[in-house]
Length: 115
Length: 118
Image 1 (cartoon, rainbow over the protein chains, first blue to last red):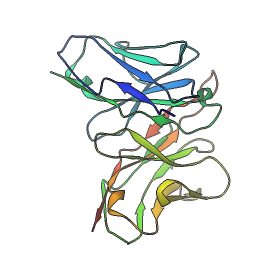
Image 2: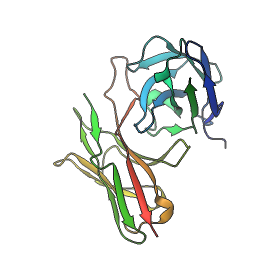
Image 3: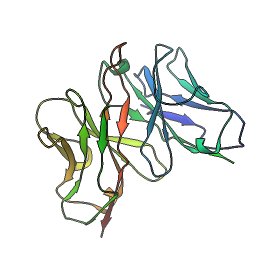
């Protein structure tokens, strides 16, 4: 049983560029949340997708957008990259958008470096 | 607003000794509390959760946590530390329900680095 997978593992981009990160949830899970973890800090919630819709959003600008596909996988897109977007981006999956089991399972993350 | 605090940036303990990693919370209503562990260059691994019931919660890898409502704390404990327990530990609380219903949003503390010396 595969856990949460993310791709790519590492990514280097230049300021102003756009990036797309991908996540496949754990088998049986239908809800995906994205978190940003800056160096030395705890993860910060970006948004959550359930039934292909954004259900909740954290305090992140519109440059951060996402998508969920019918197979429950998800993408995180960041436009007009800033140096401050450099971070580890974590995907977490769960079942039932918070109405079911409460723990979330995290992927290994994508390390984004903006130069 | 919901929040958690981890007052110690680092905890040092000798292998075989008991360990405690502290967490306090501030929430409105009943808290849903979690502990996660992060190894270098890895994602977060779920250790345990408190939703309701017994104040002593047992989790993975021999860890347990004690929920204390009067002290608004949820400290992580292990009776005998291993060198392999050395990692970054995060306490988290689930956010309040949104208008549209339940939420999965977790609010994390700043993390505590646990260093277990052989």
